[in-house]
Length: 90
Image (cartoon, rainbow, N blue to C red; front, side, top):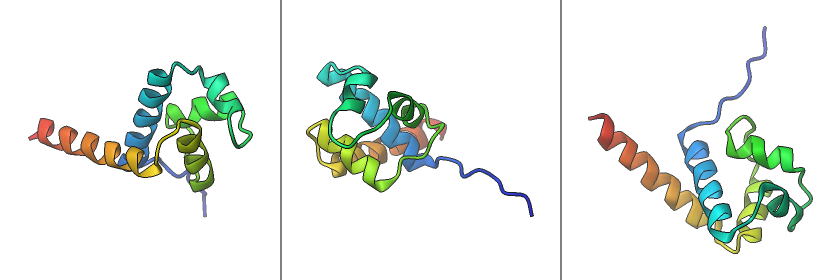
């Protein structure tokens, strides 16, 4: 059986957008954010932000912590994004 790649779902896409917004608001480049906290390559962060790579829970918590935010903040933001998108489609 062929292995198919796992796609990033709506929540993951919303979290990725929230990470980009929070990083920009703090004035961090991808390289700067990747250097904070848990070691992560800037390319890994770039792939997470572009939803090319799924964000594991450990990376998610480390990114939120480095951005001085609760992981819940990113999840709530993701939920709001999905709600706006659903209303725009109707």
